[in-house]
Length: 194
Image (cartoon, rainbow, N blue to C red; front, side):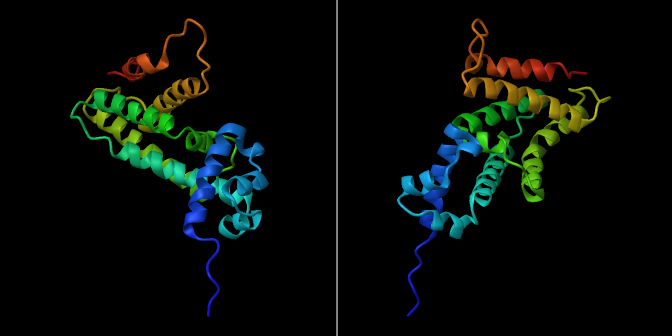
């Protein structure tokens, strides 16, 4: 008779979820496998068995985070107005970060990305590049720039705004990034107008 499977998918999911929370509060360097295992009611052996250790666990979190972000951005419907579509992508990006801040931290924290993770990151970036290309073809955005460069500039603006909001790091008098987010994204898009 085969031995029962002790380290199953349910335990894997619990470890992954708690690890994400610990990453968010303590960062990659502060993620302790002993604490993680204790919090979930298992042993560190389970982490090694299911993920191959801490690097494998962090990689799993990062890869899942990029998949989820990519799916959220890809699900933004085409509004027919390229500039509004870019703002909608920005809002979807922000919502993804606010809904799962621990995954956002895992994506853009200190974890090193391998080729697979970089591929998932690039795939998550693709809906923004495609939206910029549509806006350029429609003559809404300047056609003299590279679409990937424009998309990276917009992503950097989004990332900065979201990071400030997540870390409650907006300087006094800086306004509420939640209230003004769409206007700030629209201003970044307008900077690339034809």
